[in-house]
Length: 55
Picture 1 (cartoon, helix red, strand yellow):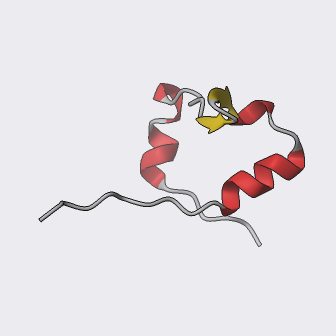
Picture 2 (picture 1 turned 90 degrees about the vertical axis):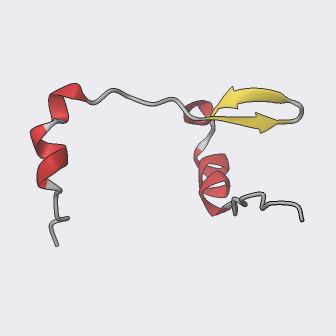
Picture 3 (picture 1 turned 30 degrees about the vertical axis):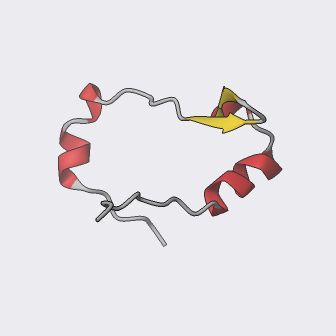
């Protein structure tokens, strides 16, 4: 099964750059790409929340 590609992304592929994602681990920030395979899987399973308005 071949994944479908977005024509807009294909057209602008030369403009894209790699994005580094950092997360807070034990009180300091660390890039996710330096995690081992188990920690990367754990990071993908995390739930993110959006803080709502107060009153």
